Image 1 (cartoon, rainbow, N blue to C red):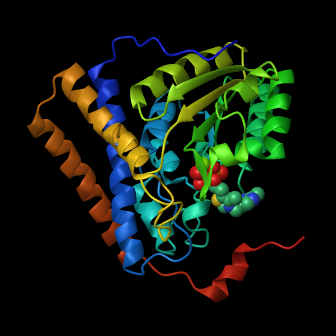
Image 2: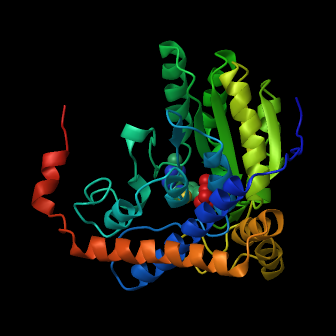
Length: 328
Ligand SMILES: Cc1ncc(C[n+]2csc(CCOP(=O)(O)OP(=O)(O)O)c2C)c(N)n1
Ligand SMILES: [Mg+2]
C-alpha cells in the first residue's frame, strides 16, 4: 500500500473526447455562471470549480450507471461530469421551479437521487459518511455499485473523515474517497492546518490502499480511478485518492483570492486541466482545430439554451416553500 503514479494505456478517441467535452462543459458552466451571478440573477453562494475540472471529469468517466457519487459545496463540476441536465442546473441556480430542487436548494444543494447523485453539500465533510452509507447499502443488497465521495483538504481534518473511512475499511466497502486537495480551506493554506500535506497518507495509517495523482491531468485521474473502481468491484475496497490541484480564483465568487501567491497560481494555470484535456485530444487522437471549435461551440450553445430555458421558467414563491418542508 503506497502512493503510486498511474500507468496509462493508450486511450481511445472516444475517451479523450469525452474527457475534453466534460472538462470544457464545466469550464463554460462556471465561467458563464459567474457572469449570471454578477448580473444579480443568482442569489446565495457560488463556489467555482475553475481549475479543478480534471478531477470530476476523470473520476466520473471511470464510473458506470448504477454507481453513486456524493459531492461538496463546490459541486457543479461533479454534477456535470455525472451527466446532469444543464437546463435543470442553471434553473436551480436561478431559483426556478424547473431546477433540480425546484429552485429551493441553489448552488450547494443540487442532487438527483434517481441517478445516484447523492448531492452537493454545504456541510464540509458531510459527503463522506453519506457515501459510506450508500456503499454499505450496496454491499447489503449484493449490488456491484461503487460509491465515490468527493471531499476536500479542509474536510480531511474533520472527524467524519477518519471515522467514515475506517468503517469503510473494516467492512471492505466498494467506496472511493477522492480528496480534492486544492491546498486551501477558504483562505487558510494547507500548511497552516496540518503538518502532513500529502493527504493520501491518512489512508495508509488505517490500512487503506491510497494514491496521489495530479488532479490537473484528467487522463491520469481517469486511469487511476478506473483501477480503483475495478478493485472495489472485486471486493478490494475502499481506496483513497488524493488529487492535487489549485483553484483559479478565491474561495467563492466574491472572494478576490488576494492571498493566493501569483507565482503558484501561474504554475497551476500553466497546467490547466481543460487545456490538458484539449491537448490530449489533439495530440493523441489527431483531432484538428475545426473539430475542437465545433465541440466548443456546441457546448457554449447548450449553456446559452439553458439560460433561455431557465429565464422562461416560473420563479419559485416563498409561500409554496412550506409545501416542501417536513416537520416530524
Ligand atoms: C462543518 C463545516 N464547518 C465549517 C464550514 C464553513 N466552511 C465553508 S467552506 C469551508 C472550507 C472549505 O475548504 P475545503 O474544505 O478545503 O474545500 P474547498 O473550498 O477548498 O473546495 C469552511 C470551513 C462549513 N460549511 N461546514
Ligand atoms: Mg480546499
